[in-house]
Amino acid sequence: MLVLMRLMRWIAPAFVLFAAPLAGAGIAFAGLGQPSPWQLGFQQSAAPTMDDIVGFHNFVLWIIVAITIFVMVLLGIIIVKFNARANPTPSRTTHNTLLEVLWTIVPVAILVVIAIPSFRILFVQLNTPPSDVTIKATGKQWYWSYAYPDHGNFEFDSYMLKGDEFAKAKAKDPNTPRLLAVDNDIVVPVNKVIRMHITADAIGVIHAFAVPSFGIKIDAIPGRLNETWFKATREGVYYGQCSELCGKDHAFMPIAVRVVSDQAFATWIEEQKKKFSRNDSAPATAVAAVPAPAKAD
Ligand SMILES: [Cu+2]
Image 1 (tube, rainbow, N blue to C red):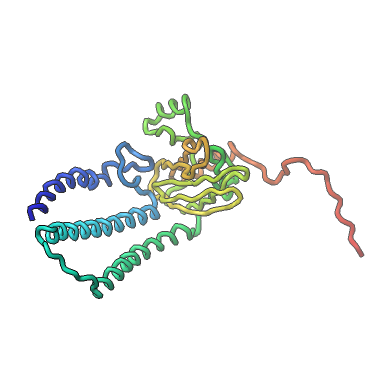
Image 2: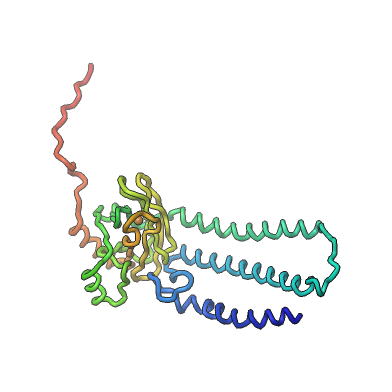
């Protein structure tokens, strides 16, 4: 018992030291849409999918805590009760059928309890509900291009702000984060389902499109179209990064999503149509007229 008490004397302050800041972390440290200094845990959620992920994370954390405490208590009992001094002649028991059945079935049951909500969230992430806006994001070396095929079919590039450009943006809005702010944000309406089509430049490399506050992360692969979706429930600017090691400027191709009201979105769409308009009906190069094939009759 003395050993256990000595152990507790060490464990109690350690617990206060590490667990107390963790308990407050949810509110104190997690930024909305961007990381914050001394952040622990996720960035704040701004989408139903991310709410699910955060809930699932906390659920699994409680299971882990319970298992850890259970194993620690067992270890404590063994150290105290069965050390050479307290228990000089050990028992020669080798099998216990009930115990063996239990320590097989209980972990399986725990895994099933974890798997069910985990699969549910995976299905939610991969089944896009009827969408209001489609955006195609193309990972390039090393920036993103975005197209709005069902809202004017314009396309634009989005580069990270550097040097003077960043200084100017920071002077305008002190919340502008370094290495995350870009020249052209993706703009989406609030509370609408946004379908994201993700791919990468055909001659390029694999990237990954990720925005933590929306709980989305999906690979951008040359020659392949991946799909995910999100519904932002709060207005604001949400930042993400390329999340696949893609080359020399991997760290410098951030993603910025500005969530605005329906009206502001409509206005923005009209502006962009003028700014980035493209004409898909015209061929890229002039082609000589080909005579129609003669009918064989
Ligand atoms: Cu990348």
